Amino acid sequence: EDVESLHAKVSSWTITALLENKERKYRPQTHVDAQFSLPYVIALSIVRNRSGVDEFKEATFTDPEILALADKVTAEADPAADAAYPKFYPATVTAKLKNGKTLESHIDYPKGDPENPVAWDDLLKKFNNLTEVYFDEGRRGKIVDMIRNLEDLDDLSRLADLLR
Image (cartoon, rainbow, N blue to C red; front, side, top):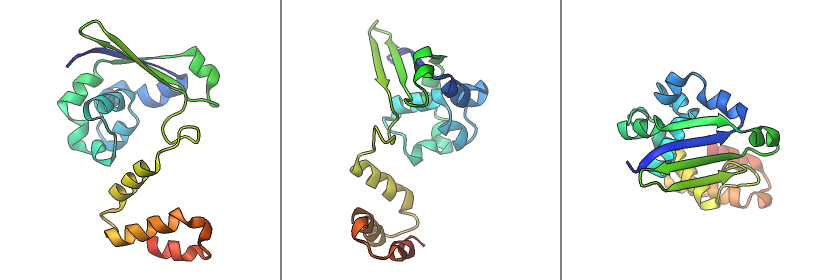
């Protein structure tokens, strides 16, 4: 409720992929709409401070608090971002607060890019979150152990068997 506006400066490609069809980008109808919506993901990241699997379920992408903040998101193509793309994927978001303060954040590479890798603990949390409905804790632990020591694994079929 302290945010007056949010403005993103991104590449033209990002505008095309994440802002065209504004009706569905500002009011996602499916989890895929939500995943590929710049306004939704910016708002979600601020409201929930996370963007995991649970944040892309219908109950979340229809959350009035997230949608109200998404309505405050605007974006423009940044010539510097276009010049850097595809070597870099820069994005800058500026938040203007109601008290007059301005906050800005810039990245050159999104989380998960080789130049901005996901921390092992974060990857492990995501793996467990995505697989807990399929594998019990013991099996997930074996999979993680094998992946951690992949260079020592003499037969990949052992890992494949665990993943079936």
